[in-house]
Amino acid sequence: MYVLAIDGGGTKTCAVICDEHGTIYGKVMTSRSNPTAMEAQDFEATIHGLLQKLQEQTPQSFTAIHSCFAGMAGVKERQAEDIVERIIRQYVDKKTHIVIENDALIALYAGTMGQEGIVQIAGTGAITMGFNYQHSVNRVGGWGYLFDDEGSGYDLGIQTLKAIFQSYDQRAQPTALTDVVLQHFAVDCVPQLITHIYGEQHPRTVIAPLGKYVFQVADKGDSIAQAILKEACDKYYKAIKTCYGSMLWGREDVSVVLAGSVFSNNPTIVSHLEQLALADQLPMQFILPVLEPIGGAVVGAFKQANIQLDMSFVESFQASFKQWDNDE
Image 1 (cartoon, rainbow, N blue to C red):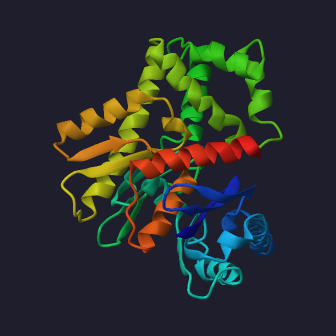
Image 2 (cartoon, rainbow, N blue to C red; image 1 turned 120 degrees about the vertical axis):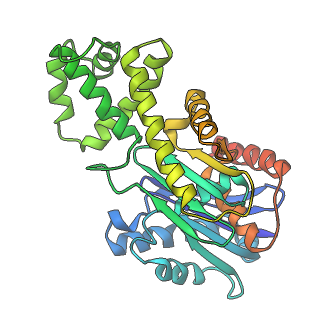
């Protein structure tokens, strides 16, 4: 059985055709496809181009697609599900089952393999979303970088810069964050950072990458970085706990998938969240994704066909995905 999976985001969009064994028969990567950040005609042209390339790449399997699952940023906010489905319908068989969902759901499925749970996403931005056995959805946070997105890379970058400038003014303790950020921007002193921060690029683009230094410096014992990290974990947990308490769950233990660049290779966060949940006696299991987000969309597509995938699928899919990356 073949399925079509789509992962649409604010930076890039990926589509694959895959079978239940994890073998990928076609894979296309293109530019962003978030309708909240682009003109309607450009959004539609991106989806058309994506599907046309995939159809040209693997015409035989394309005609046999059983179901399609698309996890796309901004589509539900723009109420553009009908637009996406209409475009997909132009390329697939009329019997093909099509589901359009928020991209947070495929991030969840990339960890739970299609089961209910909560996903905490923290990349440039941050959002918490719960999906339960009743197909109810609950969103907490993620209302934008100007006043929310707590614990995001941008938020961590802001806290880093605050610490650096307050330390420079002697309003706060010295921190090793200063040296690594000066090196990052290739400048000699703190005041020179202003030119880079308030330059031509969008502040999110400049500041969000600084978040990674919090973890590097905290691991070396810097008390300021450790305090920033602890505060970020507290923010994640508050959002996760709020989401958990607002929903009914069909499983005793609720999986919480930690997705996004902020959580990559940072086991300290997992252990801290586990301690917080244990103190509240909440049955949460904090896990990292076992698949790429597009893999979560594949899981969603097979879920529509009542096919439950297992770890053998994960191993095969990851190997196939990596092979396609090497061939491109």
